[in-house]
Image (cartoon, rainbow over all chains, first blue to last red; front, side, top):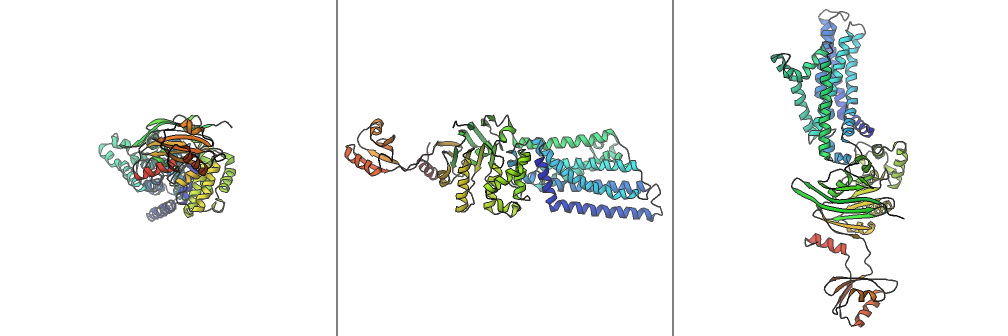
Length: 244
Length: 305
């Protein structure tokens, strides 16, 4: 892979006010939410050393963190390809000795670096529970893994939408409803039962096992394959546009 | 010095939707040649350059850069091309130096990057603005950076799409001199609709009209060319036997394009020779440059190839 796209995209992301705004907003929202969860838990008369803290604080925190990532990923990815198409940069990039794969994966890795930075900070907040509280490290680790896999999937979805859409706004408004539908398909799965198609494709259904501290190979494979498939669609779209 | 073929193009066609933009373009370029691609707006100049740069694929036809087929060996061929698009495509949030370093990395220059950036900044007059963000650069500096990014990896084929657009006369002169300098080590295709630029720098000219090349030739100076109309039926050989006539070409019935050897014959002496020759001199005028004539006809919509 040619590192030029990765470094250029990283530079663009870190110089964009939107990235820092997204970072700051998510940290503020999630830190406040975490504080409220801890205070509510303590108000119930429990101590941090008792066993309920994992279910009462950790699980709801990670559930909401996933939701926040779903809402913010399109903001980070929307400009990646669509903006460059709009300002003529994409056609210029086509004239460089870069393949469609290195172009898309370079951009994906750059957004993943930023996304992982955000996720790392999100994981650091509940990690403070390890000082004094009785937290199940297995549940913590599975939730952290779930959040990382879910973030990678959301970034792929956003990048794919950016490759398909004509404008960055169009990309965001394509990615967000799809992400929301995949999340809400869990409701349909609950009505139809666990073996339904909706349950198979729902990101939330797949996340539930991670939230409860369970690692299913099928769920990990779902996130990895879905992420790769969306990247594949983005590469295909770029290559079709390049039409060589 | 043996000439090296830099670019070979054959039967290039391209349509956007139902609109046929290019209709079978053929061209060849050797190292040291500078081909000026002239045409009115919408003639297909930008599309031709985009195709040659590999930014867009042709519907039919082939492009070979230094023997590498652009379609088959994408990476090898593209690394030999430097392309400066008409509207500079620059990362606005980078500074000039960072953008040039990005171009070096995309061409995998590795350790030579720093030296290449310093060299091209000095060559293109960018030293003063190296660390300035691109979004704060003037149009002139953006255009220079656009040219610099095309040259930073020392390409064998340089494609410049209207590089003097938006420049003041001083910058234009500097850019033309830079382009002329370029043609020593590479083949250059320069697209423009400014005849002066072509006259100043091009060794060869191609005129593009409605997606087809309607005129293609090496550029000759016309100061020693005359347009002559004679009543007598003389042949080309007869005219070329006259002392000081380098070349004679019939252009229409009775009319000739005569090229004189200025070392042997000047125009007043040739005029007095013709009046005394008995060939019935009807007209003698400075030859109009063919390029200008074609371009004027194109602009007036009365061109027929």
